[in-house]
Amino acid sequence: MEEQQHWVKVTWKLSDPVGMSKTGRRTVKAMTENDNFKNPTVPLATVTTAANRVDDAIANKKNGPMAKQELKNAALAMRDIVVKQADYVTETADNNVTIIVSSGYEATNVTSGKKPAPGKSGAASLISGTSGTVKATVATVLYAGNYLFILVVGDTFPVTVANGQICVAASAKVYFINSTKHSVTFTGLPSDVHVTVGVVVSNTTGYSVISPLATTSTII
Image 1 (cartoon, rainbow, N blue to C red):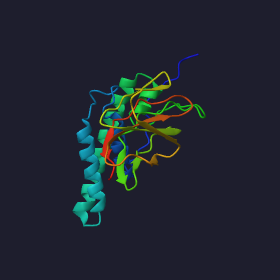
Image 2: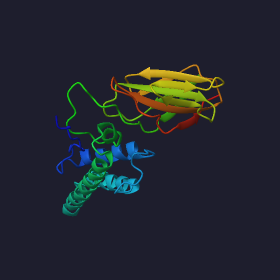
Image 3: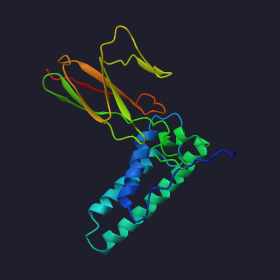
Image 4: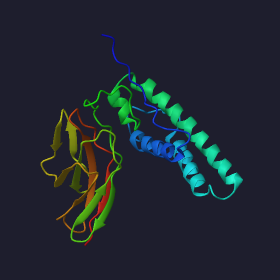
């Protein structure tokens, strides 16, 4: 049987500049510090600039003919960028669905009920609250089933993930929350300490590498 081919799925439309902007931002988060994509065709900073231009143009679209034209121009530029980056991802992934998905794009020819492993999450956004609480939130990840939030007390993160196992240094003080939601709140933490948070995303097919780390301090 001939091997099924996979490439980036076209999910954006010129008539939906908001969707294209979201696609661009999602790929920037997914491809940042992603070893699969070390030399993207379009620099990630350029993608972010283009998405900002689209968002600004949408906000100003009612300010006359020139504003409407700027939205058209911004949308065309955004489409050109997401297409070029999609071509780069398809070529780099070399028919590997997991690598395609790790870029923040969707993949073609994914059999229903057989989702690929999810890609890496972006760094968590952290908010420290009173009574030793820290709220951690990440953007939703395509094909995610669960989000494992890992909080370590201290500035180091002695946690690794390999072969489906999470390994933690014996001396580390670690808190885990496994959730189907992409936002959780840690409670009962020591006051006035630095904490570091990483996230592993998984589904029934597999799991991601640990996300970029985020740090904050608990409140006294």
